[in-house]
Amino acid sequence: NNPMPTVNSYSDSVITVTPSANTSYVGGLFGWVGATTSIGAGSKFIGSITINNSASGSVASNVGGIIGHISGGPMTLDSITVQANISSNTKSCSKFGGFIGNLGSTGAWTISNSSVTGNITSACPSGLISVLNGWYAFNLTNVSYTGNLTNNQTTYVADNRVGGLIGHIAMSN
Image (cartoon, rainbow, N blue to C red; front, side, top):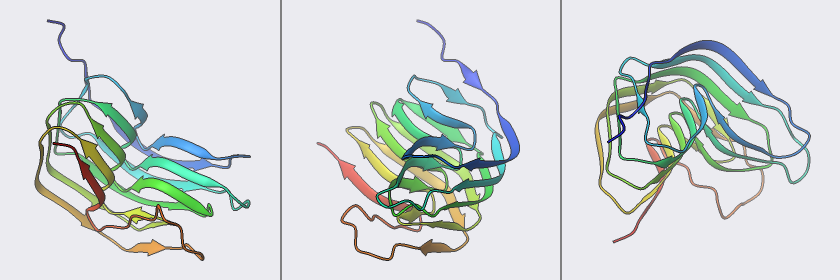
C-alpha cells in the first residue's frame, strides 16, 4: 500500500479572480483535490475569495473556502478552519460553499471539529458544503457555519441550491 500524502496548509491571503469567461475550481487552499489525500488537522484559510465577472451568462462553479472540488476519498477532515468572506457577482453559480464547493465521493467521509466564519454572497451560497454527492457514508460531527448567506441572484435559476450547512445532498444506494 502506498501511504496517503498528508498536506498541512495555512493560507492568509486575498484571492481575487477576474476572468473573461466562467470560473471553476477555486479554493482557499486547493482548487481541485482528485486523489486520496489527507489534509492535516489545523489547516486553515483566513482571508477572502472574490470572483468578479458580471458578464451576461457568467458562471462561478466549484468554489470553496478550503477546497473548490473533491473527487476522491475516503478522507477525514478534522479541525479545519475557514475565516473568510467569499463572494461572486456572476449571474449564475453552481457548487459554491464556505468550506467545500463540491464533494463528490468515492469513499467514506468524515468532517469533524471544523468551522466556517464569514459572509458568503453568490447566486447559490451554502455555509459549509454546497453539493454533497456520493455512494458512501458521510459523517459530519461538530461542524458549524457562522455568518450571513446572501443570495444575489436577480432571476430564478434551477440550479440554485442554498443551505446554511449543505445546499444539496444527492446520495446513491
